[in-house]
Image (cartoon, rainbow, N blue to C red; front, side, top):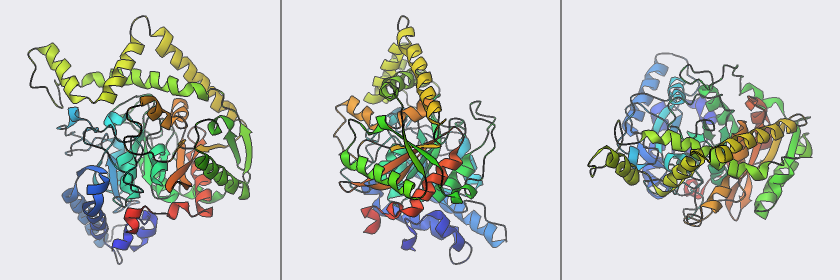
Length: 488
């Protein structure tokens, strides 16, 4: 049974109800968590008893002759900023350490309805603010490829869980690259859908105009399966869009002959590790050999995307995180003497340094006298970024770029320099500003650590994005590489 760890779900599924039960599949992954998560530290909460009960209920359904739901028995992990009924949701923050939601996030509910079995909640940078999962109030997660390196962030726990064989798939959230960047650093597939494709209901907000929920999986076919299950209009989320959800699995097989692939020159300049650059360009040449037409395009506003993002994201975080005051839920300071000190001390004790930094930056950007020069200006530049992408997509079908300028860096290497940490998302942030879909797929290694190819598509054209990603994946073997913890 241990040979099931690290095998994509679509390869295991034909065995369910024959020589493999859902309970047996879940036990394999619970065993992997018990054996190695003490080193990787991907999980904050493991719901073993609940997972066993859910798996046994599925087995009873199978025994009665019911047809398999699409994700029957799939062992999944959830980033701990997704609300789960009866299971604590901390957002990686001490201020929410005791919080237990009374409901499931819509994406979580849809996964359960599709038959997925939730193994637990994964670690993240506090309130999803970070690029390394070192900002968690509960300690860092480590990269399964090298325990001395970061797994990326903020969905580092979800990425590490999949890469370490502690889940066959996971959900993450992506505000400025928090699905794609850790997917790249951990050597798995991670997809950020178009803004509005997947309901945000039950996702604890960081920056509401940027946040999206998406799948993290071992390969593109599993990614399409999970995306299919969680997509669609939700009346609980006014920003979810009522557009048809295509059959993502059916769209995988079309190939890339004649597909126009844009190569933005601005993504291959200063700051890009030469080994990463070569791996990504080699991947583009593979697409070209499969019949894609590659041409260079321009995104001149790229240099303004990073400061634009941090103004908008921090401003929205300042507003969203005002609710954590020690009154309604979460932790409360025991040193409060009056209402003001309750607010001040609860927030001072509960929030970590990075969250405090971003709240202060955002509050300043929204303050009287500065709003016009900072927040409003950033929104105007955001429009220019979106227009640059629109111009590119008049000429090409997808864009190909590096996901991250570097492979995984060492734990502690960038914690003292916030700017260097922020630059880890320089290639993913513009995609969030424009609300576009993006996917990272493994495309090689740099100094023994995984490298990801980022593909970016038109709004609500995840089908084309997945088709190109699948064609590349099938022509290479990078997605079959497994982290050392899985090979030991």
